[in-house]
Picture 1 (cartoon, helix red, strand yellow):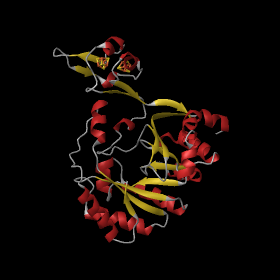
Picture 2: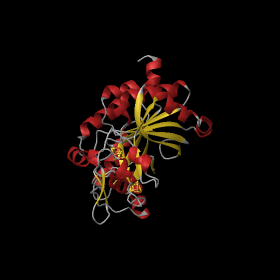
Picture 3: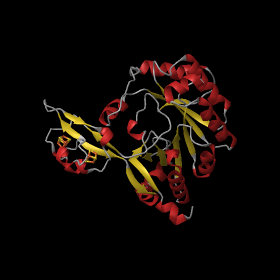
Length: 308
Ligand code: SF4
Ligand code: SF4
């Protein structure tokens, strides 16, 4: 792609979080892109799964004024006899007219089309903080590589301007995409979600094999990796899983560190607001449990493991 075409490449961004300290080293700006190939049952960003823009409705903020009902040309907003606000998400084309009509901040659209230059302009504003803390840009999602051309162009532009670049990835993108973007990425934050092909497929919708192959590929090209492991009691948590995490980290020289991500249920409320089911019945782990997981992983070898 020519440089001018790269700058104009567009992505669907659903959030830009500044001063993030949990998405790689130092202070970072995390850019969240829509679209993901996996369907993890515990997904904490359900608004990222679809690559398309989508409507979100907060029942808590709604005062029932019905302005949205009048604004919507598709009849998405209706009210039953008891005054309950019903939202037909499937009929919404995310035009945003109802969002503009709502004076109570109860409606929003997840997903905004932005060019590489527009996102870069936001990111570069905080270069002074990145330089002081050895931080930079983190591309996240969803799965950032699902919008590959955009991610590649943005990573390139940031590298050309001296920024540190991380990518959070579920590991399930095309091998050629990892190869192509690796020269512009300082650190891959690579998910390890479940041990065993069957369990991985049941919990994420995709087999482990592809993810393992991509992890090996990153080892072959000596790309730096932090292994990020969401731990969901009752779903992927087992002695076998904690041991597999430790053994994997010990066996690959390019894995700098393991980060355990204890379950939280932030995805539950967001799923309801976009009309998605959320069936996870996991308990939020106690501090003592989390410390036991860390100790367990360390007991299997010389592994640098922390929480994230
Ligand atoms: S975003 Fe557009 S189509 Fe969707 S509910 Fe609002 S007004 Fe209707
Ligand atoms: S315009 Fe906003 S506050 Fe009014 S009914 Fe619609 S969502 Fe609720």
